[in-house]
Length: 425
Length: 171
Image 1: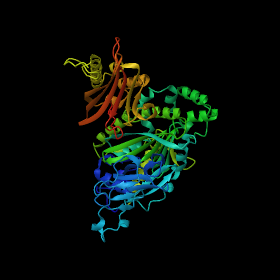
Image 2 (image 1 turned 120 degrees about the vertical axis):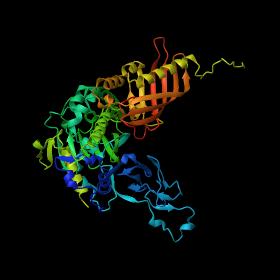
Image 3 (image 1 turned 180 degrees about the vertical axis):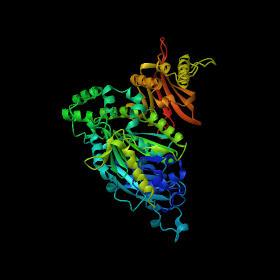
Image 4 (image 1 turned 90 degrees about the vertical axis):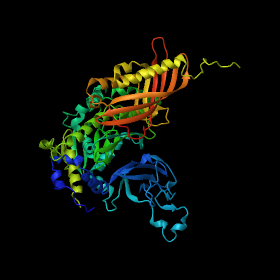
């Protein structure tokens, strides 16, 4: 990527430590460079292993604006393949998920194996001495996984995934404690779009400040205990850490930030019916039941990994940039594969209550984000402020810049990574 | 075998007065939703009525699946409260809607309940953008001297598995 910035000034001028220019949301030239310098240069999350459980299982998604297939091959390995026939460019897979022995282009029936190898060309005599099949596989992205989470990158020289995740790794481990030893399973996906730039969503997952205002209608609809769990505005234990590489963690419910540590607090009465059912089944010890119920709301934090996936309380939050002013969001519900069905169902109901286009939370987020995009069109050079909490930000024992969960420490970390990647020619 | 007269009504005919009562309620519900009169809409349901917008186009087991909406009376009460109370920015700025329901077919009919399937075309307008949402509806309407009520409403959106935009209104 050697393209020079197509606007006056440098990215350092547009993204200072405590503010970013409004044009970061609105300038199509900046968006194009973000695709090249971020989404086609670093690790982008594409799937959880439970979405492709068997050899031949696949899903289709996007890395930046480019369509990809993520699948599991016969050896159990994960592949991420550009969904583009090598002949004339048609997509070779049109399903959002499924199981297949390979992929055949609908146009001239060139067919590809699960690992992308070109297997067959109809009427091949016209290609004798012209096309060697070995030279025309589906383009393969580098694919690596950690804890069942699968990332891919077009950049063959990218650092190893775990190095990129860095200090986010132990928090990923903590996040998955909510399935209590059962394998993690994606149990459903809410998808919606908002008319705004992808970074507005990137910021939101580490924006504790908006919660009691934007989500007041959700807060007043839930039981007292759940509302108290999310009442972190004046809780000094609720903090945000900038973990480096653009990743951050916003701890909203500190008592649930490590589910191995039981604070002994009473279980929420709203789940009494589940406790009784699990007790009656005779399949679980009292300790297991307590642990399972304590985990229903998830991990107590939002772990934001740059640039496109957040481990958010009890679900994954994925962003897909569509254009400079449109972004698709996936909220992926999680359950315990083989765990108590009644608890998995309760998790679905909790997810429906807040998430998705008809939830009590997501539509209000989307309204705020749409309004940011509309307003940011005014005075494109006028800064967007990300300076909340600079007056109380200090390094943690681990050396992470740390402030209150309502502060914008995580956003500052994400923009520092953005600036670093965008300034790299 | 008796010959059918011109005025005889087939078992699954829309001309069945019981079916007409159900159609009338469904149309009244549609207008109530377009007018965003959610407290009135809530009263159209039976106490154990279910309102569901599934994601999986094939599922009948809504409890075991993730849905866009899966409301019993308690959730419906909270949803109406949320839509009316003024705390929700998306409800305050909701799109205006107009919906047409037609293509009714009769699935079941008795003296106490009617199940109808229909097609809904909803047009929503907000901030210069017009959006169309197509859906197949299934209503089970209970018939009673105290008033007919919705016992089940299933909204199967054409695009339920893809992005459905959050627009602050109900289907």
